[in-house]
Length: 99
Image 1 (cartoon, helix red, strand yellow):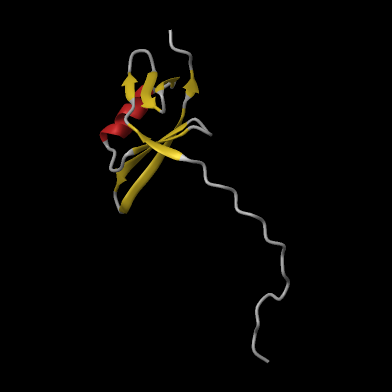
Image 2: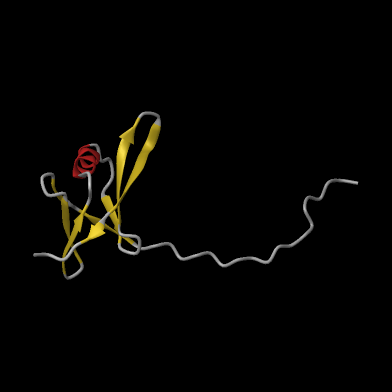
């Protein structure tokens, strides 16, 4: 009798919708730790405790920077040896109100 694999059927779970991302060009203030970029109908203002990490990643970027508003995450894809597509670096930003 040939092997027929698993014959039990698990109920299918609907896939979660992917979080929408948009391309952005962030400006990083290394002294204040501020990260700003235009989005939608205005400018978004954030803070990051180690802004130099974002600046270094932007200097090595191989793809456009992505912003996910749902998770407040900036994703920079950087060059990496042996990785044709590069490696995504994620930065969780803290929202601040502009002064």
